[in-house]
Length: 232
Image (cartoon, rainbow, N blue to C red):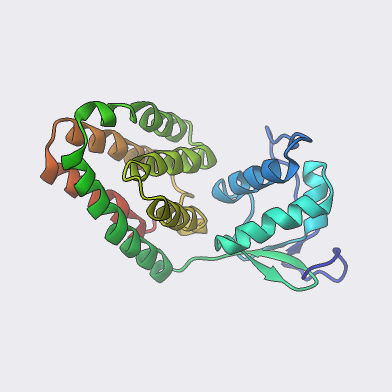
């Protein structure tokens, strides 16, 4: 496990300057606040793939002790976002095109059949309840807010798969989506127009589900999930 910041290589970051608008996590629920802040930094491209960051340096950035940072980073390591580098810190994971294709394939195997089953089982008004989540994704994409879009995208998919009532399926698909978000240059680090195109697919999917156009809904769901195969 990593300890301190001494003897770091040129690729290790001893200090990560806070970005404009970054705020130190609140003192209550420090670990959770740090975890949320790190997720935003990863999805937004502030923490770079392949770079090594020490827990003490990140702790200084957020104005907390190193302990909650290490705990949050350990959770992110379990999600595949970072890798532990003994005696140095945590390296942000890099994703190859093959990694993205495999993630998209597994997501398609799980999410698309679930949506198809739900399409025939739920009344239109249940899908209408997801409109605010889809709108939040569009708004974040329009701002070019990659981190905000990552969270909105996760919330939308989580809410949709939660309708199955299968907690394990919801957990697994959520983890896969997080791994897609951590994809670095091939993931959510894209132009505003590309984020908007993805966000608009949530709205189009809801439109098809509400209209009970099952074949159209399946096509949109499959294309939306499979888009992660093709880095921009």
